[in-house]
Image 1 (tube, rainbow, N blue to C red):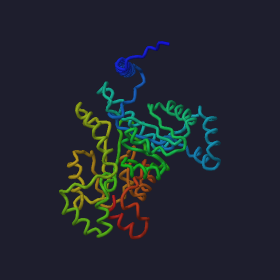
Image 2 (tube, one colour):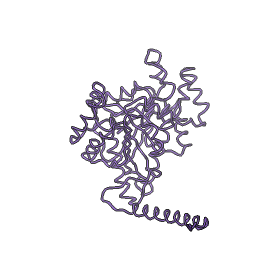
Image 3 (spheres, rainbow, N blue to C red):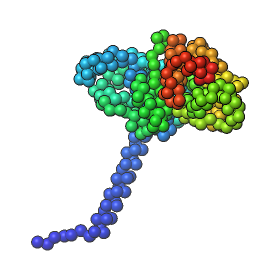
Image 4 (cartoon, one colour):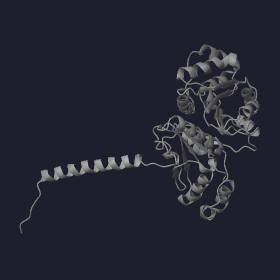
Length: 368
């Protein structure tokens, strides 16, 4: 029987043609998708966005559900969530912060209708996918625009944070937060305060501690080893040497990028983002290095508050931030008691100490 064998060159040409055609089809499909119109705001592309990854237990109040999971196991937990999937979950610790960033997005879209430099919130959870229906229903009930989910079915979601191009990760799980920081991602453990201050619904307010949060723990190590006088001498000597960056420096930088978009439209005095440095450092003795470090980074802070060891709680109650970041739990506790939404950053030498008489004395006079 005569067999017709195709010319290898013809096959090669045919293959090239098919590849080119596939490439053309893919580009056309992508263009079609990108041009789709909707009344619902579409999430920005991750490379342009300031991405906030938040766990489900941080966004919503899931205390009773967590208790059920711990006491009766995963199967009972999932069954309960399915049974109650039409019942919206109540707001959790991160809810006001997430709501505030979405209000900022609304302002940005008014000024820059085609811009993708926006906040993007990703729900990052180790929940089972079946629980996703209740989470979606809760998000829609509260009017949140959260389109990106990562539900890992019991596995840690930390490995996905970089893939989602995360700028900051907020969770109630201290171990996961520590793991994220070790991976070089800004992260903090959020806590539910007993009472909550009335917050601004027109301005996102973010407050930061200094050492071991925006900056490294370099100066704290000096204090622990040499005491206050050595610390003051060190800061004066190295006043013009910028501090190394801390775990949340890049998040402040991301906030600044969005602030400048408002400044460019002559909206500085009406900017819906305001940042605060709340530090226990003394201004005259050790404040100059902090301010010069921020300047060397090209970053602005709207308000810098040097407390010289005074308690932070009363001042934070006045600021009413949507979130306050600190590396010391006793500052977190003090802020929580006065109604401030607080987030612990487990970084630096301070994590190696427990509260005790000597440490309390050091904290009172030195620690941010």
